[in-house]
Image 1 (tube, rainbow, N blue to C red):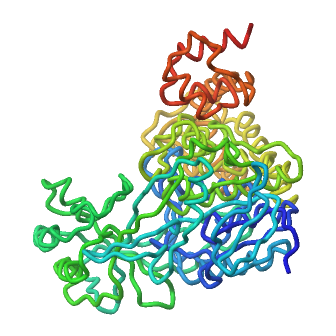
Image 2 (tube, rainbow, N blue to C red):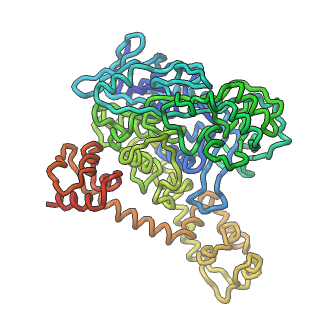
Image 3 (cartoon, one colour):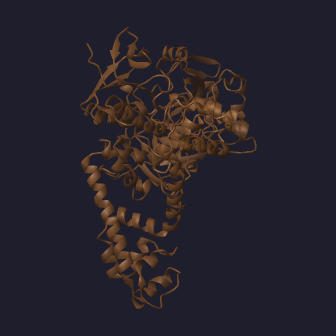
Length: 620
């Protein structure tokens, strides 16, 4: 009934979709197995993509040849560039999306990918022979052969939903949990744990009074995620901001005795940086109010997502508390919020390719690795799909460095440090964030994506042309001179000192008061020269000029630290032979099995002295 597939992807959430698309576009024959074909690419939580650090990840996925940026652009209803008041390392794109169109665009994208087949059924187990995965077992008792398997089970592994004192099995509201896989993996020798996440109630937008809220419109000139020719928005929908108050908090507190979290019925740890509303008012008792983002679910629906009000309290308490929020006095609730517990597998059991250490050709991606967020899941799926394809075609693993991408930071953190709570990406996790900006993701990664056969030739050529234009513009900025009598009046209006002699335009651009737009307006001839270039190229040149010393310093630091990656460690290296290693380091190294001295240096519990000892030993 089934051929033997190169890659079988289990689960069709954000990780599964990217894994299937990547492996198929690289040439593998792929089977995507999902419990429900109608929920491919489902936005289970908020209808938005990107945000701080997460937006950088979406742009990186796109630069490599993934689909998340394209799907987000085709389904967005609002675009905002966050942190514009800060430096460019902090700028983070974010889209508000039409939930239904997002899922539809994902399904269409996959259906248009020739090498992807689909099968709707639950996967109950893996077929493993001689330490290698060779297929999957389904609930109907079928065995489907595959040379590699990518597990992207999300919150479905033994998922349990909690609402007040009620709890029941489920991977998502109205969808059953997946059983069998966890038990099989534990029997093989995998370590597992439990995590928890939650979602807020959904409400009827017609019942809200937006006049009592603050409007949050999109950017005046909206951007987009993808470097391809997706269209920017011509019209946008606003989001809205309101706040809880002491009355809301008092109502919520009446349900604490029935809270599954406070009463110990939930064992898994939830995301630290996205707590439930009951957790907020319990942990931050001195706060009189908490911000609520009122987010529309799409162009053609009245459903609204109440961001900031995630809860698992009884539904009547949720409803009573919502009615006390300004603008929600007459609210009609569509469905209550809930918490969900699910199994995950500590990611220290993985190689940097996301292949498991215990079973060859088996890959984990997404929440099964302890992460939270669409973007974190999607980038893991992309990398697992790439590496599953590479493995079955006898190619080297594709691993991104910490200095190359936020994706590299995320996977390096997971594999070397693990996580005890749902892992979320922040700019602060990246030590090279001046290098890893959202604006230069294509310049950093598209050539790599092209080399592995994922990014198209068209994408590669566009990046090369962009690179040439940036260099040409930088050359003109160095060669063209600003003439005092032509620019001094404009410089005075910008509150910066006037010129006494001709200087290169690039020197003017280094001044804090002078941006590329101001430079264009100083003089007609200057404006004419700069207007030959696209806004994207102009922005790149400005960032390079203004931040050149910081970029150079970070680049040199990255090169120095990455020299440790050249020192390889054999997978079967016997750490017990190195008596000078600390006992904690020896224990961690035997468990994680780092591939290089550089990776070893980033493992929690391994000291600089341990790194030095092993470096000397290997040198001998």
